[in-house]
Image 1 (cartoon, one colour):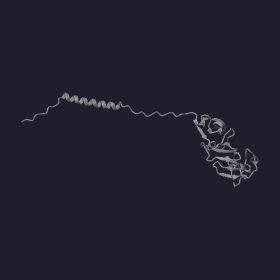
Image 2 (tube, rainbow, N blue to C red; image 1 turned 30 degrees about the vertical axis):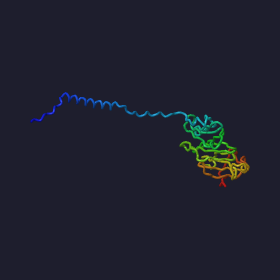
Image 3 (tube, rainbow, N blue to C red; image 1 turned 60 degrees about the vertical axis):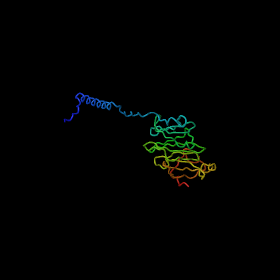
Image 4 (tube, helix red, strand yellow; image 1 turned 180 degrees about the horizontal axis):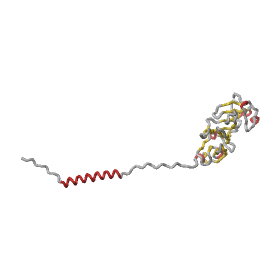
Length: 235
């Protein structure tokens, strides 16, 4: 007995199936090619213009109290109302080099005489303010690679901090006039003799002068002038 043969698909059916497969594959490829691609975000343009820090002092607008020129560059002291919340701007209006002062947070009040700058190989600016009859100061130093704040503030219970090249090094030192008294700042100390203490820009103490019965007796007062031969260990 002969085995019955399976019916064969007609050629037209095979062509139809093959054509459908080709169409399906083509549709898949087209879908992949037309798929939306993630576009990298455009680089934002840097925001340029005056620094906000140079326009706002505390809760109000900054105003210029004083300015000086150091090797042709303007250094300006800016402060808010009543000389509080101050900043130092280097480079004129629109500059982004702005340093916030520290002494106003200690209670110092600034005015038009609060900025003193000396241009030298190492340039220095002193910012000083009054508080309860005393004076607090801080130093900003430029050694050609920008301006930086020194680490420590200075306190004078006699009310005077100045810059002066005492050692003849070509850069100024910080001269602080103090009453010779263990309880510095107390009412009892204000009638005691005074002396000038000299510090390097890093805060190191170089020495002290002898005693004077009153601040006004120091040579050059209030532009105090100290010579190296006057210095002795502070005791």
